[in-house]
Length: 470
Image (cartoon, rainbow, N blue to C red):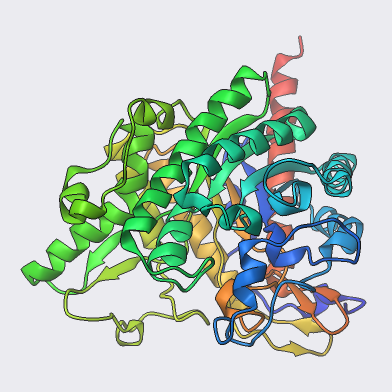
């Protein structure tokens, strides 16, 4: 890191002080990561293989042929990483737990070393004034459970409930929130229907059964954690987006409605309305999941919060694949359109169609081909992305949506799933050869936003206290 990184920052188009004024004093700000993407492994750590270890070993499925064995070596560098979070003034950290690290087979014996790691990690956050936000499942099912049927098997649902209860016993009195699943659509659709994520299946019937079992395991786990007296707030995290037809043609509008059903309503309706959307069930036909008596009641248990991950809008086109390069919009390094208005649109639509619990934006960020020059990374595009999407959250809040927090994705450049190490989402640059961390311009911009927010919050508290004095 440069000795004086602030001096190298170009002026940003989004004033942190002005943006900070748009949020109430109890709004929370954080960063997010996931276990498989950053932790890595060390000899003798006791971690079992996950489906992503198995998937990475297959030829040609990871763009650069890499895997998660090294990642960001967070397993041994966690203290320095927490120091880094604290140095940026970030007081909330969303992390995930590797199921196969704490229970290598996904059932049976627990790994004491894995349990101790997360115990130390949470205590380390609290010691630095950082609130922990745990996610139980970020796509890394123990491979041993996959061999027994994985998420297609109803038995995995019960194994997840057992795992959730153990994590609740270990951490539930110290973490602020527990999310059961991160983006079940990704697990079901990309992992079991399209085959581009682990476990690499291409079976729509299997994918839809997986989606139901993920939701069922969520609902049963929430009930179990509450019965155990876990005080943390409990919820789930969904990836969502508005779906726009590519043209005004009827077939594109029909496709947009169906895509919305599969991405948004398929998960929101059973969670908050008690059933799956009928138009999607009709479309699936024989591929619809087996839903047993009592399942929907279990899924629909009340949420303490709903996490929303948003990156871009979706475009529906009936006769092929939409080419984002034709849109005229700025694109990220993933080829995704930069479309902050979609976040406001999504939040307002959800507010209109559902009785929402408090909402957190649990992931939002962008990959860019960052250049490390002169000891600094000038990622003005990422600053613009984050600022415009935070403004989109403020606009939704002004319209009455109860958004209570925002987590930037991601703290660190990391293993980006099927893209390997070729895409960088971090606000902190990672040199994978040396593991050196260097905050980018976006990290300092975010730090300044949070500093302005705290100063404004402190001013409000002082004014209230002054008014209360006799």
